[in-house]
Length: 173
Ligand code: ADP
Image (cartoon, rainbow, N blue to C red; front, top):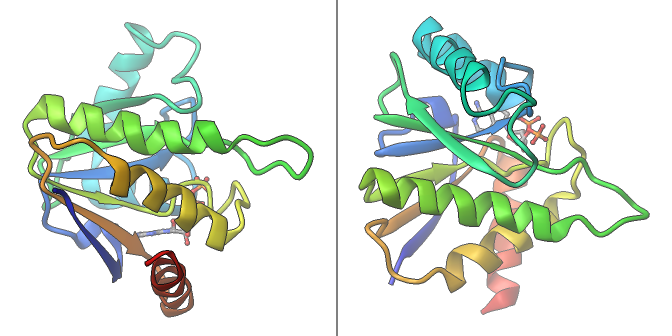
């Protein structure tokens, strides 16, 4: 069984084996949590991302997929970069959002990570409604088969988002 924690905070300060980055497909940095990870993590992460673009992902990392780099100056050991879908009111892209969590977990497991922290993927610049973003995250994390990862932490940036996430989990019980 994987333990799932909902915490409020800044994911760049979290001490776990792997933190997940809500990246964009360029892998070359952006705003939101992506910007914070590259700022705090230093240029080593960006150098590895550039190498990934030059080798495996010439056209960018596809939405829903995940790939790891080391974590530079961050307290974590690895960053797992994943690309969430942009919210669409006319098209259901939720399976791609769930793929982000599932593929990030798989990559973390392949690294031998036992603890992983996730931001609320797609719920910022990509405009996914917060309650549904939490629902999609919990759907994957609660159904995950046992792997080396025994602790998953969903890190909500502000108090309002954290309270919403706790409410969503209560209603699922
Ligand atoms: P996306 O482009 O996938 O929407 P964002 O980074 O814009 O990604 O937002 C995803 C979520 O991460 C949002 O809820 C945002 O408030 C949150 N966030 C932004 N910075 C941080 C941070 N340093 N730690 C944790 N969460 C963060």
